[in-house]
Picture 1 (cartoon, one colour):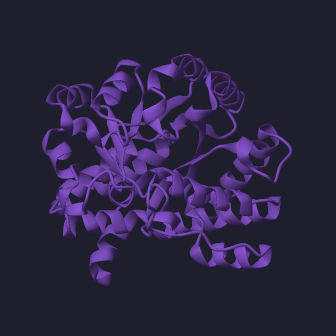
Picture 2 (picture 1 turned 120 degrees about the horizontal axis):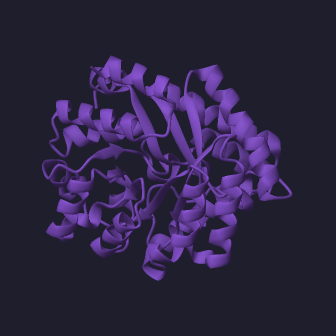
Length: 323
């Protein structure tokens, strides 16, 4: 990848809508903290299965055991986003898993203002997506949605749904999603990654705002048409899908098919540290290895801004620059 080619996509104003906070840690920071704590550096980029990926993610969470580390992480993640031409960053996290704080509420009370301050320093709007762990049961989902609702005017912009979808349908979170909507929050679940197009259809029927991944919609033409008809945005992360074995290579990834079918897509990096790419890398790879024209990728950037929960003034400025 040439610097001028990368610089073209750095200069493209974009929102990064699919990125998990802990896994956006810098590799140098990871190695420093592992050394300080006397633990092994987890595997990066290569995982034998989804469980090994979750194990590596668990190490990242374990490292964030002081507020000082969480504050440094937030500043570095937002600084990196700014360097990648990101104008709006929606970062996902599960606050109750933080070892640095006594409760999920305490975690959010620290994280949200720290992220906003980092955003002001680096010129990036930030919004938090509170992730519900679909494997933790219905009580956890309801508690997570109610927690998000309490922080709806303090930096939380949406609720998400994470973990292995093969064991729990998106429909199980319907009540939690309703609580989030009543609080004015968005709903952005992970579906259509490890499970098939039936989960994408179920999410659309629940009225979600965006779908994280959703790529397996291509397996059902009816669902593909439904996505295009409703205008539901997919937050697509091609490298993540390849590393986790959803597709064998970038060349066989369905992002070009989705775009040709009229599906609105944003492009994200998902877990930059664990998958070895940032959001600009994903744009570059989409052109170089997937054959997507730069003009169409500029439309993905436009979609990312339009589909974000950023304030109107942030969107209008970015869209004017894209125009």
